[in-house]
Length: 239
Image (cartoon, rainbow, N blue to C red; front, side, top):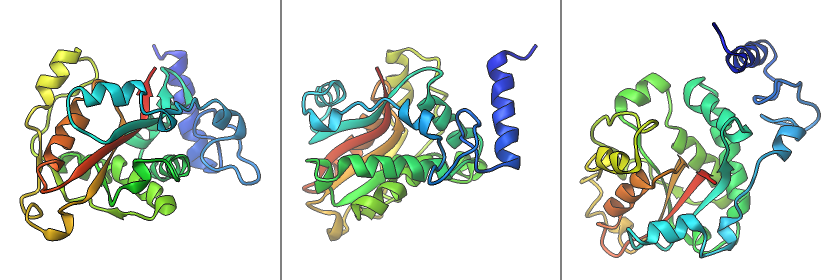
């Protein structure tokens, strides 16, 4: 038997198919300059404000594992909340415009915010080629492209490689997530000795961060580049 939430999701999907100018969260018709979300759902996004606080919980936790310059996230991830629904349609319902939308929101929050605005390159967390072919895009790349519309940085989507398909992280414990992700990312050897990447600051970008296993693994690889500095930014972080 279908749950009420599942029925509501199907209704939103059908409505958006026939009426693409509808809110991707509640299904209400968009008006005026509204894009992706209606004003009500946009107002229900809960911003972390981490970019204004060096001692934010994500930054403090990541710095215990890796020497990054800074870490931040745009929104608090709430189950059944607006951001969970947006990330779901982005990853599983081929709504690529959501990634650009979230990236633009992120870019606007990071203007003038050190160290993020000082990055030389935006580096999206890669996905495995098989998943890329199935999904049609890397959601982190779309977010980076949206951010780049605001921040005007160079995007490097080939610096990191996803080597193997790890199992889904969704139902794993914190320890199992770290074990599952180890060795699954590597620096693209083609670029290790390219001078233009040396002595540069890289801003790693992901859609959502939980344990930090993926981000830490990617940051470790980027730090193998001579003279590199790394910061991290995610769209969502659990409260």
